[in-house]
Amino acid sequence: MFADSVCESSWADRARRARASVVSFALQALAVSGLLLLPLFYSQTIPQLQFMSALVAPAPPPPPAPVPAASKLQQYLPLMLVLNVFALLVVVLIVIFLLQHR
Image 1 (cartoon, rainbow, N blue to C red):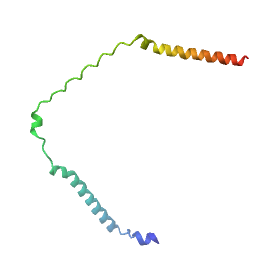
Image 2: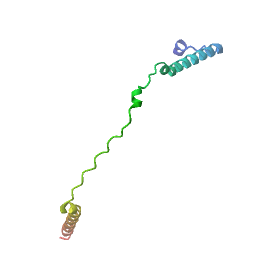
Image 3: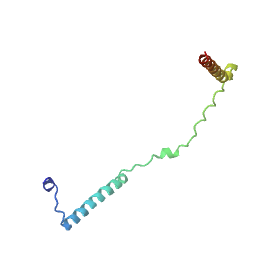
Image 4: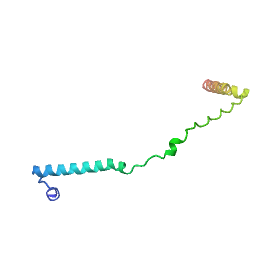
């Protein structure tokens, strides 16, 4: 009942359907062509002064600052960290071994 009252189901008339399709297509084509032609009516020229100025490359960036030499402590820090972790692991294993054999 709702579909019968709201939706018109008399599209059996082919001439009416064809006419509506042609009008719809024509209006859509007119709208699209108008949107495509609109920028051609409102175009602006590029100022001539920009073409006459010479392009200059920017100055190169300054060279990076030299890296200070690392001290002896900083050179051996990763090795000392690994040795400390290894020593801690050995101590933990010895404690576990002693606790199990009591």
